Length: 263
Image 1 (cartoon, rainbow, N blue to C red):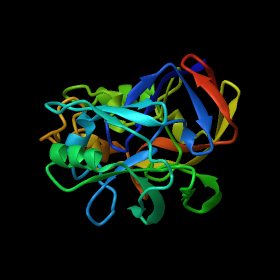
Image 2: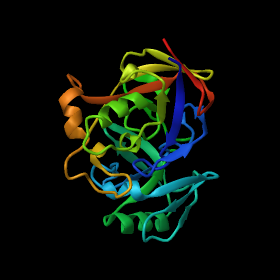
Image 3: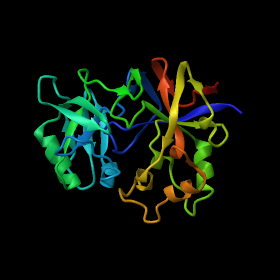
Image 4: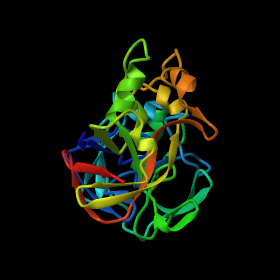
């Protein structure tokens, strides 16, 4: 059975709508443009779809160094990248504190209005630094913990066979979806090569209430799915796992349709 890269996804602003790509460049922090921006609260702590499901309705598209942003019932927004000489904040992502550049006041007002609470948008620029937990040599963006999340299509198919109503892979917010392998084969892979780029497995991805947020509606599924079903067959000592976190051991471009070789 030959495995291939079936799809590529980035999330320019953490927890917002994913963008589907046909190709992507891998740099030191992961996929280029992936989670390089983040919304924070009045205490400079990260805000995600766990607390604010409406965030998934925001679509942010990279535009030069900045963004084009839209959301339901909101005016389109052009966000300029901070110039490096403006305001900076120490922002918190889980246990990490990152020095980040601040967007302008109009951008903060836009996000605050849409989310119904005080919010600011910050950017991870060249002056910012964050490393993977326990791997000080590896950089990471504003992602939860690791530069890449990969899930096999067969894993999703196996889950959907157990659900009353099938769901999209978008519930799990992967970067890479791999087709042509057995369900949860990614659990066992230690290294993979996608095209010419090698990746090293970091740890299984533990899942949370964010998986219950409908990406089209921006609300939680009242049935608690798919987390409720995942608890019945994917519970481990680490938690409920679905997908694998990875670190790239090379730089370059990957494309949908690239061959995936597991080691």
